[in-house]
Image (cartoon, rainbow, N blue to C red; front, top):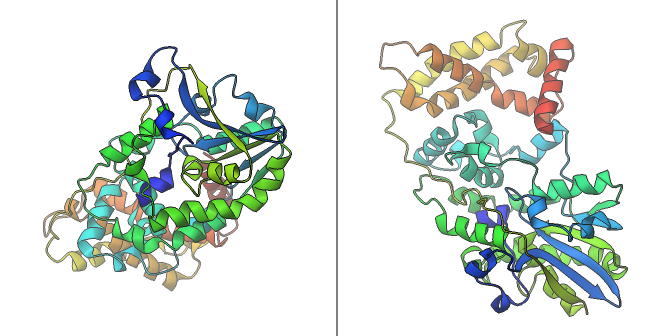
Length: 416
């Protein structure tokens, strides 16, 4: 459930029993619910949109004529500003300075995760990624489509872009730093989810798809259980913290609020809080056919790690040490741009190189044979990843044309 809340994706009607059935919602021309509510008091109306953070088109969630609620708003509120193009800030949000992942979970679990994500997440990044961030992206990294399953802007970011395009004032109820800090408090819970699993999250994914694409609420208990402490911490407590910011704005009407749809839920949801404050709540509907898109997997399917090759530690050092020494030689880019101290560069890359070898352990050649050119190339790309990213996060990238070019390339990658 904890992972579902990160992606969520969930929304409840004020009157679930009155919601159309799945078959009715899919019927041509039939009214179906949107994750959009009009809230009105003293003749002043505003709108709340429950967003599904990924995979759902804003055009599907906010079809005509309801798109006017955003286009004509006098101010738009979202959870946090998402148009971040500062690589250093993003690294600071996601980078863990605490013990590495390999020291926090068993070796078998670490190797299983490392092998499952090695095509997209080098071991030195896996080692230092915040557990909450790793757990949230693992389902996508391990799905058959990988990150390619997610296309276009997240709905929340699209809302922000459209508001800016129309010069509508844009405000936020939180910062990304606040959100990251909150999630770090649950890192131990996220760590417990990491490791081999055959669960593909089919039930959760279907419930998320039904909620996000069709507004159906029958599967809500799959996603959010009443009384679950994570629901209270991630949803209820935050909703109440947002109200002092939202309430004065909503009182004047003309406000468009777009936050994760789970925040609309239950007795501590925004809708219930507003209703208790005297607002009339109306869920809006559409005859537009629902999208046939599906939410990405809700759980990561990770196979157990293969047996540990003989003398893996010695092999890892034998491969990593010369590779690190070569990368940290005088005049090399690693020294020029990311770590000028030769001893620290070599020590760090040797350690990270050993992690990379363990990540590719099942592809190592038999004793006495040389690694293939392909494996050497993959290791050469893996080894420096952690040191490079850490240097970016700490604003320690060196000067000079090559370093400037690398900074520009990294900023461009973040912007995409």
